[in-house]
Length: 412
Image 1 (cartoon, one colour):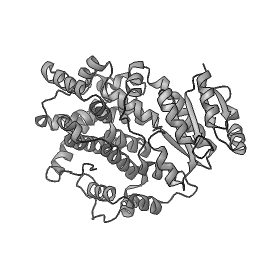
Image 2 (image 1 turned 90 degrees about the vertical axis):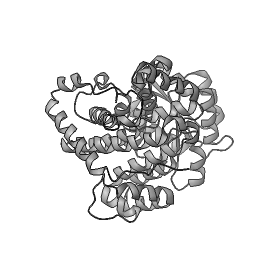
Image 3 (image 1 turned 180 degrees about the vertical axis):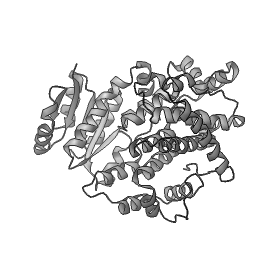
Image 4 (image 1 turned 180 degrees about the horizontal axis):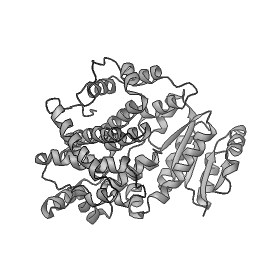
């Protein structure tokens, strides 16, 4: 069955340009074009659409108003907005209702890749209970604003590390946190980095973008509301997992893309815990209790109570946000790597191992059971020798940083 995509824009020339860009996808996708929010809602009442792409500036019903109605009436539909990057006030209005953002003028390849990831989301997450659970939540965050701005810079005709650093510098709190992390022993830089632009130039835009995304995601949640959950330790664990996963992929000479994906998966692999704890505080406390009393790994206790784990919930959200497939898969399968279709060394395996080794190193800090490494699977892939090296790398990293703990947890 073809995936269905609805475009909404009041400018006829824009709709005609989109039609030309996507004419080659007509065998795979059913695409409908309409010029107003009211007509879009009529179309949605006639049939189910997998994705709605709406222009922000339209007479009558604006794009953000339309997407808010889509969110309320059709929560399973992926919501994307199109706008000019310079329209920051209007862009901010859409942050609470849009899963993803496309900037005008939109390159045809970027458009097709964004839509392809969006329509594949429903196929990737087959557990209908995950979709239902997430669709009913009131505190599922939208893609963070500063990250969206960095993405816009990366997609510009002439992306600039200087301008990317200036974007980060606009947020003093974010700048301070990134500089604290960059200057920690985990990165081992030979000199002190003193401003976000310098950090961006030295570390690269992908690494800084990953830091911005993870810090902003954590800052979206009310720490006080989930105090019993161990918010501060979760941040530290996510940070250490990301750094170790990146080191594992670097040591095995994976390409730069996989290294950066492993880093961001490590930083965000437990985002599903935050979503569950924030939206279902009492039931989630029951999951924590069940884990302790029956000595179950927490993700298995979640399965018993919610029919899905934080890994699947987190992967579903990142898929809605349009993050690359290796990132979505890495988060989704970080406890169950054998369920992934990818059998090569990449983010799934690197984060699975890094996550378990970090929990093992800090086992005295929590009464929770976390499970271990799927060593049978690692050995079946012929990675036994590499696994020994990874353990040594983890010991080295934790010894190196024992006196340099990272305390840059996001604040509100």
